[in-house]
Length: 196
Image (tube, rainbow, N blue to C red; front, side, top):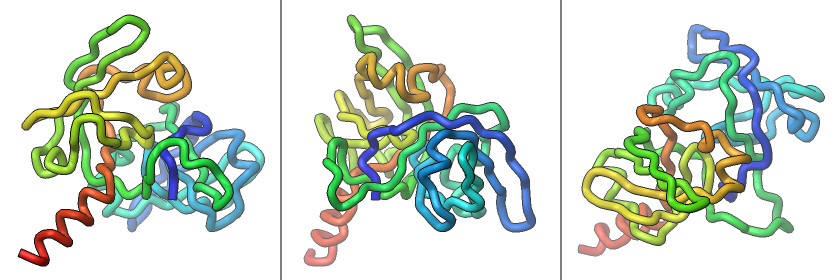
C-alpha cells in the first residue's frame, strides 16, 4: 500500500522486452532501500523489485500491466515517480493508493493559476464515475485532490512542491498518465449494487 507521496525520481536505465512482458531497470538512490521482492510504485504502478543495488533496481512488468498503464510506452532516459510502500508507523499524508492502475488518461490542458498549475485530464467515463470534486485520485502515483470533474475530464491543481518533485512538473499536453481512482468508491458501488 502507498500514500501517493512521491519519495524520489528515478531514470529508466533499460527496457528489455521478454517473451512474457518487459524487464524495466530504474536508476535511483532509493535502490539502496530495497530488498529483492519489495514493492515499489513506479508512476503509480506497484512493481516487485528484482536485483536491487545501491543505485538501481529492476522489475518485471507483465502484459496486463503494460495493457493498463503508460509503462508500455516508457523508454530509456524517461524520468519516473517513485514511492516505497507505507510502513505501519508512517503518516498517511496522501490517501490510500494500491498501485493498481485503473486506466489511462491524457493531459488535455495546462493552465497557470498564480503559483499553481491546473491540469485537465481527459479520461474514460467508466473511470470518471468514481471521481468526485474534492475527492482523491492518484495520477502517475501522485495523490491529488480533484478540483473539477465533468463527463469527459477531471482537473487537479498542482502546487510548486508537486511541480518540482514529480514528473507532473514537466508534463505536456497529449501525454498519457496513469490513473488510480479512490478504491473506496469502487467498493461502495459493488456493495450498493449487490443489495439492489
